Length: 205
Image (cartoon, rainbow, N blue to C red; front, side, top):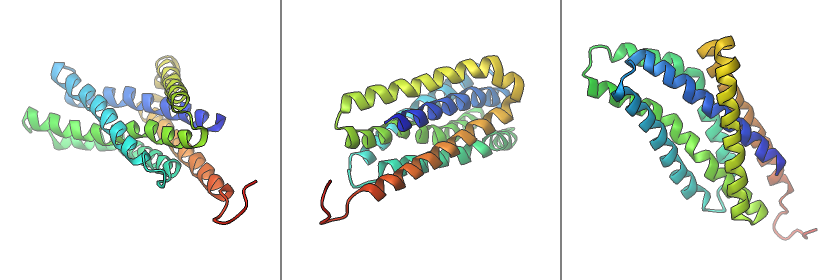
């Protein structure tokens, strides 16, 4: 299971980079006040929660390829990541002059979409890991730990190195590239696991 832990460290690393940069970008567009902070943080937390519920429902069915779905989710996060900052600035220009409630609602939905995808990654990998190890507690505990470890490393790296050296745009591009790498690795492993599954009627070794 070392490979799955490694890619989930990277997934957590990229997710935290998004949170740091997106918050700064949205604050620069919509201003730093109690309302904007509340909207953005709420969107992040709600998206992660909704994604966790949806991912859990999807991963319950053993016929669904959880690892393939995880790969597609990471691909979606990466593609959004590459487009995120130009999209945020376009939305900022579009909402100029709109009432505050409409502006905050648009910003809320903008953040809710990718964070919902992020929230689904843990239950999808848990579903795959449980089928492989038959140990729910171990799968949940270790995956949650390594994902949090990745986020912690990203928080340190973003403050002390990445944002100062790369700036916001290239930091987001780095996060998106990591997502694409994670997606590719998960897809490769999915194909390997499918290739090693014995066909119906074949003798088990």
